[in-house]
Image 1 (cartoon, one colour):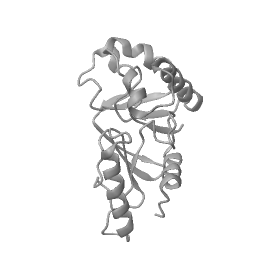
Image 2 (cartoon, rainbow, N blue to C red):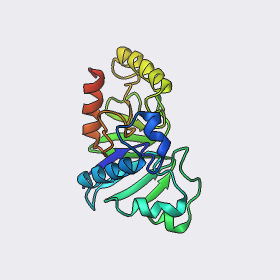
Image 3 (cartoon, rainbow, N blue to C red):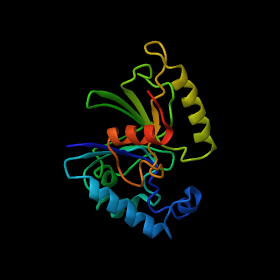
Length: 196
């Protein structure tokens, strides 16, 4: 059993291909690639934490997209996800919530669609905040500048660790695939050269 994380899939959202510069000819190619990548990694007893903006479709169409996806699914709502789900949609998920905190291999993980640089546990170097929402926009650039400053000043207890990481599917280390926490941490460090 493994935990996987991913955000901002926007399955079914034609305009997101252009908005993110996603490497797909159209929304159908994107949908198929996301489903194929998901099922190549996730097994029946694995859990996937979906950090919002999952599917861009009427709620009645969600089973068409969710049905083929392996594993147990926990949805942390994003701004483009329904506020309320009917009973059929609720049964597709183990849980639907706005914020989730878990332990993953002894590490504290806080998950929300929206970034929170100063999350509960942000002073602990073994705590991580995973988020989506900002894609690779100007907002994300602001977050990177803040994170760089926090990491430059991190000196142990009493200062935040700067461990807030974008798990949007379009991030290079995500590559439209659910990833483990170790993969996310390694990919983020490799991309940005963080030392701590």
